[in-house]
Length: 485
Ligand code: TYD
Ligand code: MG
Image (cartoon, rainbow, N blue to C red; front, side):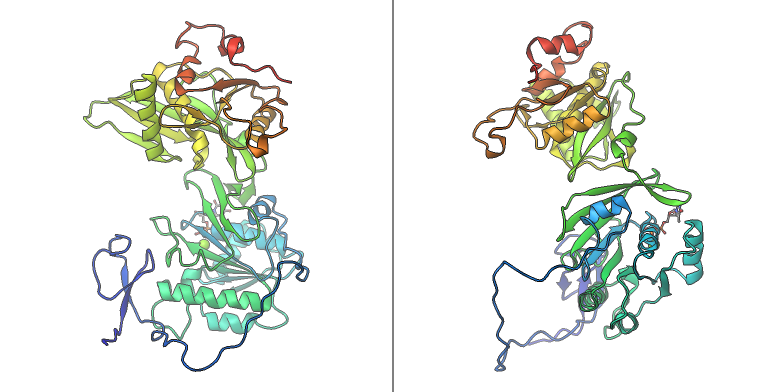
């Protein structure tokens, strides 16, 4: 057998390759292979030595969990599912400069009034950290600051009875284990350092937060490797040119995933935004065509977001299509459905779609809101005033029901909206969750306009069919609006 001395590890997908190539054969990423020493020789199988017997237990019982470590920052606590779990590991990923260090310094500063917290930085010098603390007006808090990159030193310091309750490692890409030859930031270093730190956190019982920088492709360098090792994965995202930042949980062993926390970056650091809906629709104007308000869900929280579109004639053979904050293939689908099923001609136009405020929407429930914005832009007529829209659209143009209708409607009502355009409920009977439930919207004061097909949505525009009937209310109430109660 030929024994490979070195291996090439893709820094993007983490696979090992025996030879260097310009493009990774596994993930097709260019220039991502880096030479690394294999950590150990291949395992030799079990051999003759007998292992210890493992013990099986039932699901019931178990000792009481120690209480979670609540930060006091409502948005952060919401995303972690109610505070950090002792002995757990949390990964906070995000683009460089998005504000991870700022956020975590603020969080530990708040926590340090109740418990001992350590902030270990491998990227910045103590003076830089102090400067930031001064800027954030946190200089008088009791965080233990340290600059270190050797995992061995960190382990020696944190082991034992007087370990702090919360430890931040900023960032995992700077950490190294001295028994491995590759440079910090490489796959094997990142993986081994994280493994050691996570094991240490379990032993010593502190809540560990690892900061990880995301490469431009959107994965953490030394990438998805870490996601399965940690208990919770949070991504801190946002458009650096906007002041809003969103902390999103994509995995959480101790709470709901897909939960988001919204922050605003200011001179004095990151501030919680307790009512994001109000903020995302703050610049929404009822009288402009091409905009709609989407009643979305982010985890368990309903959120209203403005969706803007612009359709302009193009001189080019292949007109531009640009999307910010939504999936571009989903936009292409909605446009195709509008053209093929509803007779809305978009063909030779440039189409721009923007989700206001820098939020990224992933829900298919936004389909109808996007369609509404596009239709509004094409016919040059604003949507009926104070209207929210949501619902999925199928390839036949049919409007499909989405989950949590009531929560969405309630949020719209709370923020002063008076109408909602939603998919018509089909096959409600027989679905267990609907049994014995009142019809959708039966306890809302909103005027519910039900849509069966996307072409119905086209017809809802004031000037599309009726030349300026006095708003869509009259039109809608004739047949579509269900009376409540
Ligand atoms: P930082 O937390 O260093 O980002 P990361 O750790 O994710 O790399 O944030 C850096 C950015 O935040 C920097 O561009 C300046 C900005 N910032 C503010 O706007 N206000 C502040 O109070 C602080 C501390 C930083
Ligand atoms: Mg940083």
